Amino acid sequence: MAFDSLSEKLQNVFKNLRSKGRLTEDDVKAALKEVKMALLEADVNFKVVKQFTKSVQERAIGSDVMNGLNPGQMVIKIVNEEMIKLMGSETTELSLKPGSAISIIMMAGLQGAGKTTTTAKIAGKLKQKGKKPLLVACDVYRPAAIEQLQINGEKQGVEVFSMGDKNKPVDIAKAAIEHAEKNGCNVVILDTAGRLHVDEEMMAELVDIKSNVDVTQTILVVDAMTGQDAVNVASMFDEKVGIDGVVLTKLDGDTRGGAALSIRAVTGKPILYVGMGEKLSDLEQFYPDRMASRILGMGDVLTLIEKAEAEFDADKAKDMERKLKKAEFGFDDYLESMNQMKKMGGISSILSMMPGIGSAQLSQIEGAIDEKQMARIEGIIYSMTPKERSNPSILNPSRKRRIAAGAGVDISEVNRLVKQFEQTRKMMKQMPGMFGGKKKGGFGALSKMKLPFS
Image (cartoon, rainbow, N blue to C red; front, side):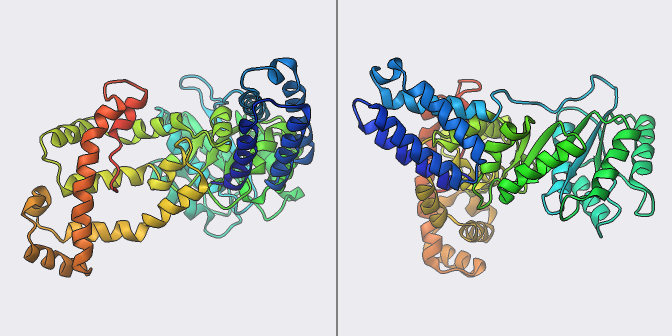
């Protein structure tokens, strides 16, 4: 995740604070100096860092904290609260008109920020909520922009309105709204043109669309990997066009993540979504409290539970639990558990949300369980007969040799998989009890997570 380096540095600062029984004013100031450096290195806006550390210091050097039973823990609590405040405190939803009234969302951003992909993902999210969105191809300049939107729209099962690249974007927008009215669409999402940098022509075009079309929300898509530039771009777009919210993409990349901590404070505009990967489920609603929790190394169990509940079929989960109890869990179920984990973004995505798992531990696990290894496991299982998959106990040496030859692997890999499978089966038998399977909406949802590794 973008904040790995920042998270590690902050956790080290907190570790030092916790180790001290009593805190002096100098201890707090020294710790905050390190926090300040860590935030600046993460590319957080200088003015934002200055105000943030000042607010924390004012609250931390109070008698309640300094003379409290656990002053180190209190300072961490203050840092967490101030970080949530910095990112906007409340979660902001995309604002839409009620009922069948048509909401018009204008998407804006520079080229390469992931605007077209994000636009289609937002349409997919709205479709899941029962809306009938219409994607509109208003980028008439970039080669293949229209085709890219059509491909992404198809992935989400959302209609794309296009008039080719010979019409003015404002005319396309007007025609799309007429089409939406005739076809019962209640959200029209305009995918406008991006350019390599902010220029007058692009801004004039966006202003022209807003002047001629009743835009409900203008959403800016910015690339987290550009750091402080993302904040500057947001400020310029807001000043020239007016924006209502921001989507921060590529937060899963090797970035410093400062934009997430600066945008709200600098522009006053909320972050609506963050892009953490390629899939629809990787466009996450932005929760300031959950993001602060991730940055401070406290995990994000709520998002993990929501992902589990969104991706897992309740009937399948019950069926798997029944099979486990009756020792009927076979390799087909093992494959199904691997697919479930892929839907949630893979093992690293799941573990990054677990409390107490740092980037060093995460990289160790990722090294042990890479994508190629997963593909080899699938190859071995698909080389088994249906009977072998449903009844692994019949896998004798000659059957294993045949499977290894079919999968193109050494027999030792087949033996290792069978051993792992047995260990996983034992571990999973204990999991429902471990997580309290009946508890609705709490850790009970995690009992559905069948992890295909030992």
